Length: 421
Ligand code: GLU
Image (tube, rainbow, N blue to C red; front, side, top):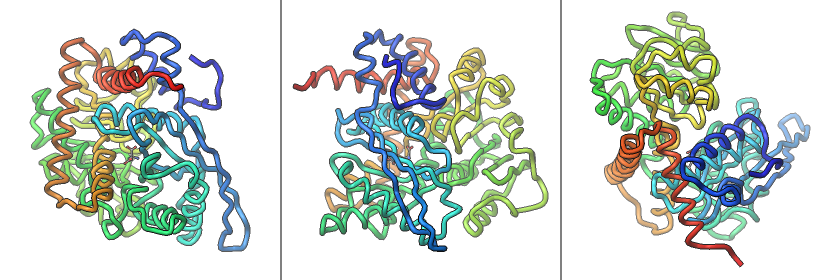
């Protein structure tokens, strides 16, 4: 594949390694690998905004569209300090495999702005969100590229994106972004969808390995939208949540934490810090504590060559994108006692319900929450079974099985469409 490109860095290399492993398995010829793997196009923008103190700060933003073969590109926009184009490209590539595995008519995309959103005032955040969307106008569209929330963005940011796009069009275009507030053409169940999907698949994995979910224990790293909803849903399924963490601190109690109280605290203050003086724990040690279910729901590469052999869980549910490095994968291949639910399967609930939101917006016909959740579970079940069948039939790791289904679907679509012109 291409030796040099603008896409560099450890996260991009991770996506490349995963792809190469699967491309070898699928016997994809070399020139075709480049065509499938390298992103179709990328827009890099400078977003100048005026801060409340009068100073002007210029933030760097990106949007990567990995492919447009199956329909519009689809994926979230991340506001985080270390965002760079290589990371955004990797996340866009993972969105492609994720959408294809779920059978959605989308290619993958991702966007990002290198900013710490917590350091901005509400007005500064709104100005940056609007400016970023303004810069993206020539690049996105409801049938070209549909944005959604990701780390550091939320329903409010999506409402500003939608408003900015709509004001430029002279009409309301709900279907330009998903993950909007329900008051603004969002769908019921989207905010909870990723966490609910994670919990549903944990339930299925527990059945597969014969783990009784009621009375089992879980540790959740990351207490944002995904981690907190996963924790609440797991607790409702009878799971005892013994550990949680976010970027501020970690809590661990083998007897169990009160997830509802933790969630209320985070809703009030934005962070776990300050919840209690008891149960504080070394965040870097949390992942290797004993539990039945380990849920990394934060950032990339937290399970790596250094800690993969120390994990003490039975199910590793990858709610984050890219939490496990290829080095860790190699170690986990020799630890069959740990059942991995790979990210592109595990956290697909978010983009699946985003797809439902887009469909509802296009049709101007809105569903109730039961319909959203039933369809979500049905879609996840189909993917889970496809992955499980392949694991058994070809003795693959769960990641290789999931990726090979996603990659092969994109490959087949590209082959059948042929080259233009
Ligand atoms: N950012 C989420 C993800 O990584 C959701 C994307 C979407 O809903 O389009 O899957």
